[in-house]
Image 1: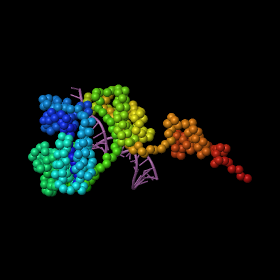
Image 2: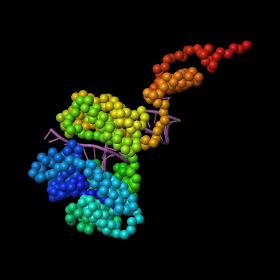
Image 3: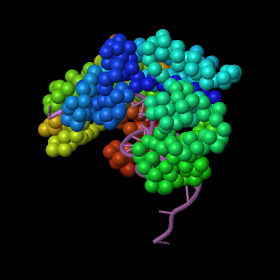
Image 4: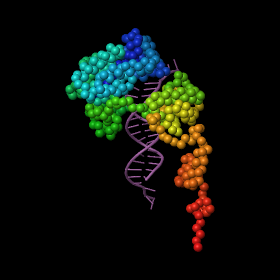
Length: 432
DNA sequence: TCTGGGGTCCTAGGACCC
DNA sequence: TCTGGGGTCCTAGGACCC
């Protein structure tokens, strides 16, 4: 059994804890650059404001609706999120924070009335934090997400679902026929793992409700779509395919990307931005005790400005060895940037991704040719001694190609005579 | 005029190896 | 003229999530 607890309208609810005067008004929280609505109060949702809708469009569409827009305060949200997680963890033995406002709880071995227990925790979050949340319970994570959706919708839109499912909903407690009836009235786009693209394809195949998708044959789904969707179907059928991740695994990539406050055209400005992004990303990298093997840099123009010439390019630069050193990474990132920069474009965004991450305890030993402290003379002498003892080519630069391979550029000497006097192998033999 | 940021996983195709 | 089979690794792109 799994539980999924999720704050209602997270960022807006958090802002309201500290500014109760926001209650009752349509409130939205904006993305960076104050661009898009990333959280909406119920009043804002009722006005038809969509997730991700640009605020300037909202203002144009609803000039007199009294929409209050706040810039995002991620420091505050992060801290409130931690408090939320620690309270909800009390629901069961294992917990997996899934996003800033959501947490899965493994309920293995928990006895008693789970719905009652859910209400207890929900009320505790309300009382201790002042934030409303809902809890979904089910045998798989995908069904728990769905149960959470039903709990929320039943609370927000009375009549949409049975009233006793509001706030806390346990799908496992329902008789199979009731469950089917419930899923038949739920649109398939509500399923975790079905996005707009796959959703459209399913609709075109004549499927519309969660029940329709649940009744598909997994093998057919795999053939026609993918293993990903197959897993989703199996999870809907009650077969757990997605396990709880009880310990947070280290990131496999770390990004820092930003849209610019205003249009950028000069290389100099992009260089500054990229240097800054590397600094932030490398700091995150060091925080997880990691090192990066590659750095990716990208720049692009604004796809929204249809009249602008468009340009979008990225480059991945390998680092000579894994590192978390800001200046080393920045040097390589800037090399990459200069290689992809083109004059005459109005750039809107740039970013840096650190890739090929590994733990900093993993160290590849190497002969450090670039270490200024190394005695290069000694190294070169050793090379000469080795080549002298074992023959020319025993030690050489890898960039010169391997001596054993066919090197097209090496000189042709098909008719050369042996090195009679300098090579033991070529020593002439005198016979009587 | 103004349109976010940070992730994960899977797949297909190319390069390469024996 | 005739040109295999099995495998790995890497990358780009697609799709999804919040």
